[in-house]
Image (tube, rainbow, N blue to C red):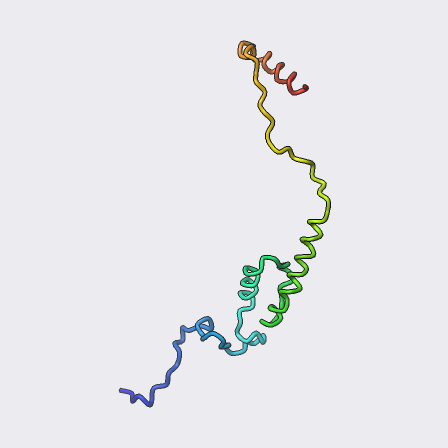
Length: 125
C-alpha cells in the first residue's frame, strides 16, 4: 500500500483541453495556437455574429480571429446598405390573387372540344 505522501495527483488521461479550468490555456501546439481549436472558435464567432462577412473571419491566433470581427461587420454593413439603396428592377407583384371568373352554366352542357374552345377564347381575352 502506498503512503499518502508518495501519491502524486495527476489529472486523468482522458481529460482533454476542453476540461481545463476557464482562463487556463493548454500547452502551446506545434502551430503556435496555444491549444485553442481555432476552427471551433471561428464557428462560434460566426454563430454569435450573423452580421459579418464569413470569409473575413480568419486568423492564425485567437487574437487575430477576435480582431477580424469588426472589419467583417463593417464590410457586411456596407454591402447591406448598398443593396438596400439600389433600385429594384423586379416587376411589381399584385397584392392578391385576382378573383375567379364564374363559368356560365351553359359550359357544363358543352362537348369536350367545345369546352376547350371556350377556354382558349377566354385565355385570349
